[in-house]
Image (cartoon, rainbow, N blue to C red):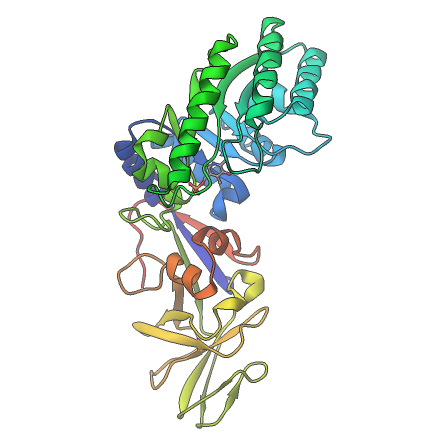
Length: 368
Ligand SMILES: *Cc1c(COP(=O)(O)O)cnc(C)c1O
């Protein structure tokens, strides 16, 4: 085992797909951007597809093509393109392209013409998030051009979609306004002669708790990984081992600063993971890990490569296992780390560094 290991339970990923499918009752797109939220895009994609996901979602061309080169033939939607994106290789790889504006639309059409193959296009409406997607005043033009290109056999318009700004708060009136705006966008597209087989708006939170947002398909990220929404199984366990132990008297400074001085004699256990590995520096003074059968605090500043656990009077030894987060009622969860660091579970998971080795297991996770 390396200094740190992320054990990924693909059985949990599969179970989460089935759980969300049962609640949402729609097709599911497994969102495997950012290397599957740090879990490994290809491994997660395979597990999700085997469990019934019919689509895969990625941000970048490289991510989409990586799935294809791994042999995955499942439909893939990729939605964030470089200004000079080489669309031809994506069209050739049968990757659906999210299209957000006219410049992009024309570039995709030109690539399709050059290749002699129709592009699979999913038009994105901006319904209130103000990131990607076409604004309502530009939408009619976008769908008219898409229809024209479809007539020339350069496009197959396979979807109309958008993304919610506040799906975690289903009661927010802005959510209702976004759903209404999305329905308008779909209507305008149909009136222009398009007949997109897929309309989709929901992320994990909406898939689980916002029936009106579900449409034909839900794009699930965080639910797949079981970090956040209740009733799902956490897929990742982040673990390590103690590499050094020392007994220190009261009044001992710990780590840089020192920000922390021991109040009583303590056994300090050195954990060989730091912020370069994804242990957030911002969690200083709040974070806990699982060591010796209980939760122990990380004390002092979290360094790039290591941090210090106050094990109190526990009989800790080098080599003892430490769990930073993982399933189980007592161990810290990713959501705890998100709270300690003032962020969301997504950032914790995608922040796990490249030095942490990924290991895969199927079925029930076993953890000490
Ligand atoms: C990341 C992302 C998702 C998944 O969001 P979760 O909240 O993690 O389910 C869905 N759709 C789009 C467009 C995204 O960028």
